[in-house]
Each structure stands twice: as structure tokens, then as C-alpha cells.
Image (tube, one colour):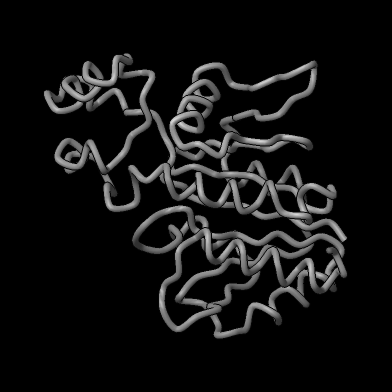
Length: 226
């Protein structure tokens, strides 16, 4: 079985150029001692300026990806090479996590790592590709990995237990689970059309990190991974 997890339309991006002249943005970057091109968009600091961005309610939450990354890459499923992990961003970029990648657990170092990745395009250590980012988009990613089944998890989906979703994945030669990486709203129409099935695993919205942790655990149980 080939299992893939994708954190989709994630609120992870550099401060966009259209906000570069905003006083609040300029003040923030001076305070932290970094150029505007060297900072992640973060609603905690850039809320007022972000009101000018389209779909701002889905943007400026790099902490969501941070928690999902930690839950995912330090799981037995990923460390044993039984899962592929990608982050698809709101800007339609795709981040691939290579085998052996161990992102920092401290948030400020994570932020610096993501900024480096966006600016350089890849993170290589000892000749090994740990992280890479491409402009292939979600469609390009699915064309590359060619999963036999693409499952989205959304409050708007068909009610199901996490155990049932895991069993469906375990019974499929190559399955991809898509989780929303944004704080509010739902998958875009374009992304929704790329999903084969959509399930809801709770009666209320759950944090992406909780969803990813539950799915990974149940897939590990289905495969007998400890």
C-alpha cells in the first residue's frame, strides 16, 4: 500500500507583494529585523493589513502547517517510509517532504526554515533533498503521484468514522488523504472536484493537527505499524 497525506490550500506563504507598502507590515518587519520578503504572512501580526487580501479568512495561519508537520513527520508511519507527505498552499505551490526530514520543533526555527524554502526552492543536507517546493499545483501533484483513490476530509462530507476511512485507505493500493490547512471555510470548488470521495469524521470542525493525528494513528493500526 502507498499512503499519501496532503495538507491542502494551506495558510502558508510569504508576505505578498501587494502588502509591502502597508505601514503595519513595514513596522513589523523592522521590529523583527527582517526584510518583508523574509517573513511569513501571519494573522497574529498582520490582521489589519490582511483585510485587503482576497479570501483573507483562509490565509495567514502558518502555525496550522507547523503543528501538522510535527504530528506527521515524527509518526512511525512516516519514519518507517510508509507514508508520503505534501503541503499544498493557498498559492497553489506544493512542498514535498523527503525521507529523513526532521523539521525543528521550535516555532521560530520552523518559520526561518519555511522562509528559506520559499526563497531557495529546496533544502538540501549532506546531499539529500529534505524539502522542495514547486509550482505544479494540486492537479500537478495528483498527476505525479497518481493515487488510485483521493479522499477529502471535510465537515461537508459523508459521515464516517476515522477507523472506516483508515480501512478504506489500507484496502487501496495507493490512497491519498486530503486535509484542509486553513482556519475557516471549505475546500475550493476546483479542489473539491479533484476528490473521489469526501468524508466527515466529526459533527463539528476539528483542528487540522487533530485530524491528521487521528488519521495517521488509525492507518498505523490498520497496517499493524507500531
